Each structure stands twice: as structure tokens, then as C-alpha cells.
Image (cartoon, rainbow, N blue to C red; front, side, top):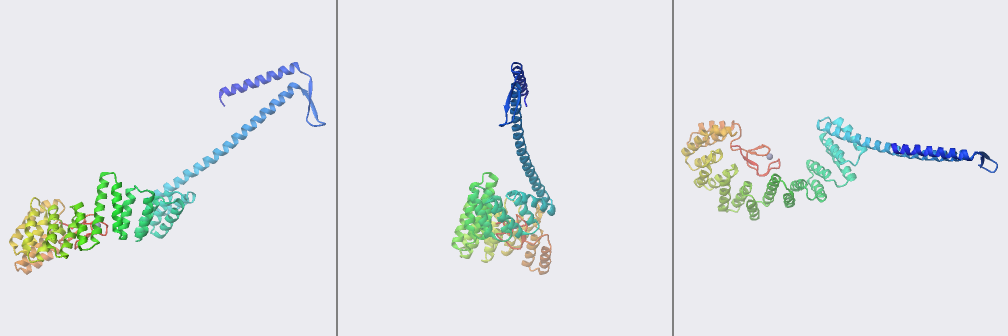
Length: 437
Ligand SMILES: [Zn+2]
């Protein structure tokens, strides 16, 4: 109550008292107050008035007390709701912390309590699904996400998580459907579009995947992410082209990929393979030569050398390989050149090239390149060409026991090694395999 209000009240009481006293002084005689037909009592007029004032004041006070009581109850109810919401949030956050630290039982207890109180909370539903996945209960995780989806509606994060789980369970179609629904809700989300492109590619729907990846590229704003989106789109276009096989239409699709990204060497290898299949060696040579000039990758060097040794004209491979060796100290083009020289019957020159690699061993080692197994392998081929079988056998053995398989490939993304080149790694990377040297 403010001071002013108190003063006002005191003044009102004083004035009322003065008025009653004034009336009592001038009207001291009693006046009857009838409460019923045979019930009355007599009091001076001033006391009647005083009673009426007191009754009015009591009613006003009672009304105030009732109002204050109702407001207090409302406040209490609101405070209780707020306290419960805070507690639920704390259960959820603590549950997630426990989940991240691997304390799954504790996380389960807190998250279940939070979900019981707030079944429509997306964060809790996601954390619970993650918990089930961490426990290896993918079917329970799937059911949890499905029931959250039914309660909360098409929430993009729920749908994205549903898709991730479906992909893990090998249901690429389910993943695509969930992500398509998510992209209807959030059509400008590059992340969802990227996930949709991956799911469609996993489903084998490469043309649809290209469409999704094209939309993603248009939606990306950050330069670095745009570049990643562009690479992803080129990789999907390459996969769609590769799916056409070594056919004229496949070759045309590969050419379009190369027109978009001339450095995408898997497309050069694919184009060369398609050209070889249709006996168009001129086109195969052109595709490989142009790509080697951009960067001498293992698969290109290998196929270039094989193109001519297969035709019995290994000397025709030499010019481009010598060109690939100039202006750098790379081991790969030198090793391919040395092998082509051996095939062309020029072991002395091949030995000279190997000596060159050996001279650069320290520099290569500093770059993390160990060309030892490949050098031993080519040295064995040289020994074989010179008719020194015993020496060749020893060198082949030495090559096989080196740090890696000679002329083996490895994925630049996940490091998985392979004896032969492949365009698609199990990690999902496209055109990532290259020689280890
Ligand atoms: Zn990989």
C-alpha cells in the first residue's frame, strides 16, 4: 500500500469519525432500527451510521482479501508450472550430458522422466532415439522417432534423424521419403538437401540425387560449403554417368562431367574405358593425356601405359610420361615411365629413372612418400628383362615385404587400401583412390 493511499485512508477514517461525532453531538436521541416485524433495536443515529460504515469497510476488506487469495493461488499455480518446466529441462539436459559421457542407464532414467512430462519435446525425443542407437537397439530407436513424429508433426530434425537411422538399417527408400518430407517443411535447408541427395544415391536413384544436389548448391551461401556442394554434385553426376556403363551415352555423360570439372580424373578414366570398349583408342588417348597433364594420378598413368603396352607399342607411351616427369620430383610418373621403358626394351634408361627417384628419396620421405616397394618392383622387372631371374625373384620378394603393396591404391578420404583402382570407396568418396606414391 502506498504512503499516499494510507494517508488517504487515515484522512477518510478521521473525517468519518468527525462526522459521526458531529451527528452524535447534535442528534443524541435514539432511533429504532427494524430488523424484522417484531425485532428492532434503538441506537443513536450516529451509531447507526457508524455501524453502516463499519459494515461497508468490512465488505470492502473481505472483497480485497478474496481477490488477493485468488491472485495468490494463480501465482502459486504459475510458479509450480514454471518449476516443473525448469525441472523437466534440467532432466533433459542432464540426461543428454550423461548420454554424451556414455552413462546410458543414468541418461535413460532422466530422459524417460523428461519425455513422460513433455512428450511433445523434440530435443528429448531426439536424445532418446540417440540413446537407443547407442545401445544398439535400432528398432526401439525407430519406434521412438516414429511416435515422436506422430505427436510433434513433420519436424525436420526428427525426419533427418529418422533418415540417418534408416540408412544405417539399409532402408535407403525410407530415408529418402523422410528427407523429402523434411525438405517440404524446410525447402531452403542445404543440409537436408545434401542428406536427401545422399539417401537417393544410396537408393540408386542417381538422377534424382543430382537434382537434390543441384538444389543444395543453389541453397549454399558460404563459399567453402558451396565448394563442397559443387564437388558433391560433380561426384553424383559422375556416378550417374558411370551407371550408363561403357557406352556412347555413358561417354557423353563423362564428357559433360569433365566440362564441368576438368580435374575430376575418375571421369577421364571412365571416358577412356568407354572409348577403349568402343575401340576408339584416339579418344581414350586424348582423355588420359589431358588428365595426366593436369595431374599425373596413378590410375591414369597405369591406364596410359597399359593402353600402349596392350597394343604392343609401349614406346608410344613414353613422350607423355616424360612430360609428366618434367618440372617436378613426383615418384608416380617416374615409376610409370620406368615401367614403360622396361616394356619398350630400354632397361638402362629405366634404371636411370629409378636412380633419379632414389636421389629424391629424402625429399619424398619428408613428404611422407615411401616409393621403396614400387622401386623394388620396377627393379625386379628390369632384372627380369635382363634375364637375371634370381635377382628378379629377390627384388619381387623385397617389394612384397615393403611398407605397402607396390602400386597399391588408397582412399584419400578414409585411408582404405586396395590392390586395384576403384572409383567408389565404401566410405562414400568418389574418385578418392590414388597410388600411395
Ligand atoms: Zn574411403
